[in-house]
Length: 396
Image 1 (cartoon, rainbow, N blue to C red):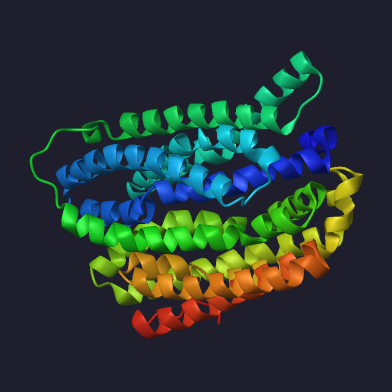
Image 2 (image 1 turned 90 degrees about the vertical axis):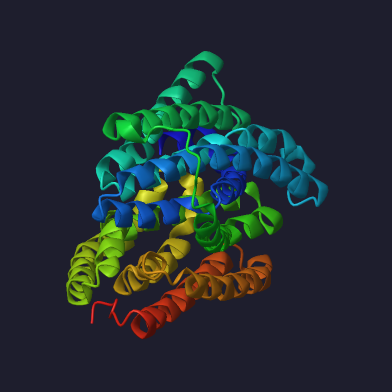
């Protein structure tokens, strides 16, 4: 709120557009390993195969770093050569792309911590240290420079992500000292590569799907519109914050229970987690719906126009919560190819609807397009979980 009131919607919109792009390439740079790591580490831990976890760590440590650098270069070439953003933003994009390798390593080491059931330790750098450090850097730059532009925000983000990467790595090594990079003669790379490629497709399509609205707004709307939409979207994320936490906690449990054939226990875990998640999310949705205008105004007068977006996305997030951890269940039970096909269909719907609605309806069109595609993939994944895993992943 302090940041948006100081820099304004337009500057925040420019910053947000670059963050949208580098988020995509950071996820792509992780080679699909984060989901694979959570699943495989949970399975290996349940069988006490700790040496295999060390080998997996060694493999992703080098591959993730090198591929993230490669994808950053490719991303820069694609965006600039095909004029996907205006030339005036190229310098901002250059700063942002420097952050991609740091972000990739954060994703990989968070996955190692989650798979090892150190969920809170994996979340702290991302959800506590990152915003705190970014805010401190922002205030320091404001005190020194007096005025903040998008480039300064991105440099603050760069140093924040570098620090978070180091903290996440240190947290893992202090917790699992035996799993530091080691030299090994044999790696089961064929199996990992096959699974990781599918996860890469799933995570790549998913992150693009979650950023289509912002990218289309960046092309057809103003920087201020994108800034307003981004804040409204982030506020509605509070509705699903309980679901996010639950997913982080139960993902390794899903993999372990499915691996051990404990179907009834898995069904009880899913049903209990969904019902508690929905019960805790309803009050949040009501408070945000009623207090939305006041909350948006706290970010600045320009952001009050995002209330309609807020209402649309609150409804969408509630439907998302009602259908539970469907994506996690599919990917943790070896059905990642099915998840990929569903998310790909959702992406196509999302792109078409955004291109049709944003030019005429602006941020409301983006919210409707995002909402429809999100509901489609949730319903289809719920049906796929029912058919392939024989699990009812809804509150009913």
